[in-house]
Amino acid sequence: MSAARDVVTSPDGATRRPGRAEPYTFDSLVEVAARAFLERGYDATSMEDLSRAAGITKSSFYHHVSGKEALLRGALDRALDGLFGVLAEPRALEGPPVARLRHIVRRQVEVLGTELPYVTLLLRLRGNTETERWALGRRREFDQAVAALVREATDAGATRPDLDPVVAARLLSGTVNSLIEWYRPERLALADLVDAVERQVFDGLLGG
Amino acid sequence: MSAARDVVTSPDGATRRPGRAEPYTFDSLVEVAARAFLERGYDATSMEDLSRAAGITKSSFYHHVSGKEALLRGALDRALDGLFGVLAEPRALEGPPVARLRHIVRRQVEVLGTELPYVTLLLRLRGNTETERWALGRRREFDQAVAALVREATDAGATRPDLDPVVAARLLSGTVNSLIEWYRPERLALADLVDAVERQVFDGLLGG
DNA sequence: TCGCGCCGAACGATCGTTCGGTGGGTAGAG
DNA sequence: CTCTACCCACCGAACGATCGTTCGGCGCGA
Image (cartoon, helix red, strand yellow):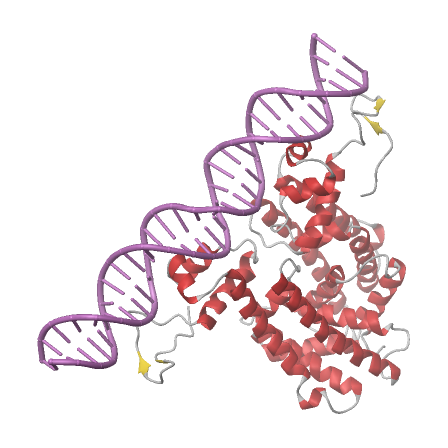
């Protein structure tokens, strides 16, 4: 549908224009798959659907991809890389807890917006296969890192005292993650969304 | 697993004790199904899984239920009845907008807690079948009613002026709905959850 | 001539659903 | 009370459809 590179550099270093059409890289097929999974759900999307969306037959599709679960794994990798990349940023590691939390929330919203189909896939997992359980484990790591930061801010007296840090962290993550249910980049600029989420999460509907 | 009534009144009015075991009513099987859908997802749950969870064979299961989609429909009905029941309550219809919104949020959290499997099913729909699209339509009605109330509160000057009512309503619904991803009644009393959600939604992490 | 991208056809497995039959409890007639 | 006809919850087996996946071959560019 998009993102068609004109030229691809082969492993041997030479540039080429293979066959008749643009080459199907693994990543480009993961993109197609994630977009289809986003609409219909992983289980309800057949390999026939995916290959048709990619513009080739089902058997041709298998020439590029080892199987359905590999596509899922590829998409989940991309989502998790984005999220954990945020945790590794300097502003997420230095400064007072609330400032670090602010930065993580803002950047997490940005990742959700830019990697929407991939993160959506991650957040809808049910843990039915080994791959799904692995991704759920990594996602839990991320949530616990945020929860630890909320607790740190609470201990420092930076948040209101009548909030349980654990519940507060769950609600925080839930608010941010719920963006995938309705946010579409063409309807609202990502920068505006980031500001809106920060305001509402930290100061509430009524304002501070 | 539970909810086994001792006696069933037949359509003819007489009370009886059928067969050998407790009777399988449609509603009790919907409960079993919703619980299984909650764990594995609708598509990933087979009729074999459901009948085994109910303690009878697949063909016996079909003696009580017309099909898989009927189970989904039954569960979605229950979720939607609970949600729209909240909108019809007197305190949701009378008083200043913010007070009505407060009441709806509190009661919506309660419905999510008591009807957890059913509401979860509703919130995970992708719209693949006619039944799913119907339920998504009704769910949109509910969300729009809440959004209209947020706009009303904004127009009355009750919320902070720098919030877009549409985005604020989405984030509000997202926060409440995200409860299904982690809330388990045995871990946290529902009354405590209701208070925590109200505080955090209206006054934010930092407090008002 | 070789290889790679692509394709049609078919594989076994599993899906939701249907069908014919069985066994035990109930109701009604004698 | 006894006999009998019936009903209904239940079951095993199989249906067609669709799933993810595999295989052998074809055609074009290098």
